[in-house]
Length: 195
Image (cartoon, rainbow, N blue to C red; front, side, top):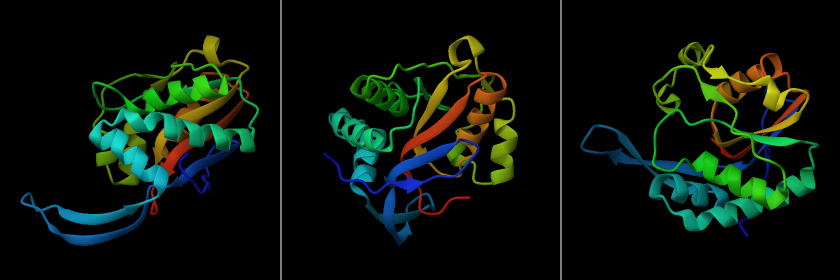
């Protein structure tokens, strides 16, 4: 099983954690042919597994990531009724967040509710670096059905925590539109530097 070192993540949710940092160090190694700086990254163990899933499409790592999440959830023990995954902002043949959420749901026996929908198309938020611009793009983006989340204690799940803007936006929607009682947040990794 993958080793991890949980990191607290703060936001509008009651309590939240990332299993570990995504990268432990990044050393610039020069520009590529497109003028983008390239880095030699040292990733945490779960960070490397997540990288393999997201960047290489390596599904053999899913069980190991889900096992680490199960171990952490069993020790943290938030009282939750459902797991709600963050919807993807881009299109891939297979969405890592959904793949991991399904695997974790099955392992811990907490039902999965894919109940957050997007009200419009947006650019991929990972490519928007200005925090104010991210917030503007997120305003009114998420729609929820209170029939699914009303009166429930929710574990909001994403694969990577960067600025917290998306998780905070969905948490707000879970409370206001979704009528959730409590929201907890879990991500597999978080970036070392975030706003």
